Amino acid sequence: MEATALIAEDEPLLAQALHDELARLWPGLNVLELVTHGEAAVEQAHALRPDVCFLDIRMPGMSG
Image (tube, rainbow, N blue to C red):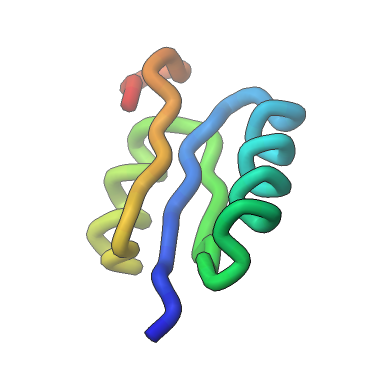
């Protein structure tokens, strides 16, 4: 079974760097969604039910 993830990061370069590093270190991880604000992270976490969430701790609106 493949693990699934959600990435919540408002800085595009950091989001891409995390995605790339995860792909290198955990090739079986399927990143379902990459969101840029806290409200979307909560919404997508409930909708997609990923195995793991990588949350930025300082985002606009609602932080991780």
